[in-house]
Image 1: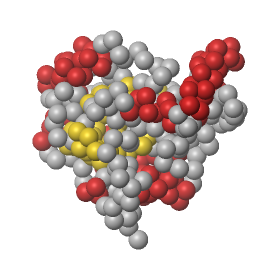
Image 2 (image 1 turned 180 degrees about the vertical axis):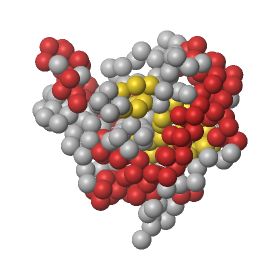
Image 3 (image 1 turned 90 degrees about the vertical axis):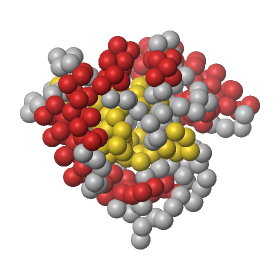
Length: 295
């Protein structure tokens, strides 16, 4: 039986100035198919997505490289139980794995189109609400990549265009070809690199900001501090979770925990609240510890 509508109220905001309206809190689906933890089976993963929808989340983020491919397939199965007109689907292209498992970045127009067609099929949808270039291909003019995305918008296969991990110059050049609706970057209490340049530029151009890892890949949920990293987690090789750095970062967690107690919430909720309060044009997509606000 399909879900009919979110049961819990969730503020809605305009992501950018082009008309895309989403829930103020999104859901990053990457971890459902394994990354920071072991993957969930399809039924369990779809149940998490349905639960998020019931709690008011309508904005779901995935990518063809997550899994790879498996994450889009999982989200597609979950979407069959949700009212499509009430859900905003974001996915990405641009990172591909060779037969040797090595990742490469590609922004060639023909690749953009092929990826879009494949994602539409895996997701089981007629259009993608927000389609990001996952990583910028520095060997191809950004104008060529965005030009193909613009054609996909004109054909109705994509509604809005986004960029992920792009420089200020790239954002400006891309926006000159076709309006960019959202830029996705890491932003949290321990990752604030985008504040001097990217945030002001996005606001100047009317581009929404989608922070990924707002709970710092689960760090503010206690990952690596109050609970050990899973042996299957790719965070085992992440510099911030290495023994030396984690010991230093632990002080940040303890200070956050102390402040959270004063506000009668968890450190993860406090860290997420900080990101949520950076502006109405900011829509974080937690997911690495299954969103403590939704549980």
